[in-house]
Image 1 (cartoon, rainbow, N blue to C red):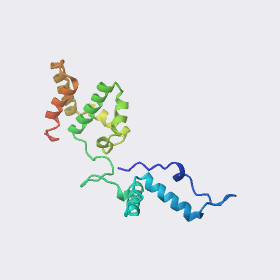
Image 2: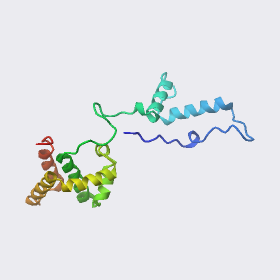
Image 3: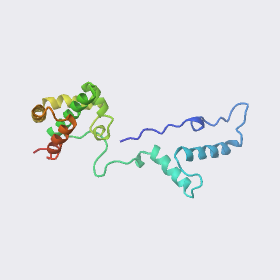
Image 4: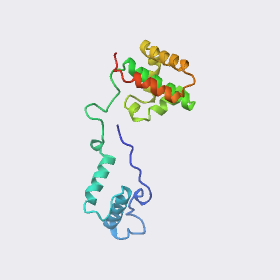
Length: 179
């Protein structure tokens, strides 16, 4: 789970020019001090706070040092899950089907959109999700789950799709994988 690099604009983006005809007003230290105040503002830290420099150090560390990133406790945040169970295949297939039905996007586009969401991002990239969707369609248990849902949805066509999905998922996702 790598964080998006912090983007700086304006004077924080421009380097301090030490060469050329115009010397740095206030010297290099003065220019650095002005940019430190701009960094405080950039990270939303009160310039009058007693702990402002500690907070700035923390904000910079969180933005740029991988060891300061927040991740889930008790499991690796690197790599894809080693095993996909039929329940995982069904969840992916269902999520893709739902996005296609709700938004009118293609399956590839749905995989792209899902890969941006935290719960799916940790399972794999867009291309991994597309490959796993193909695997899901070949998984007998996932296929049976989807067919059961489709039968359920045909039995109650007057029911709102969102409410129907909530009912079905309340039952389906409450059972642990492998049962």
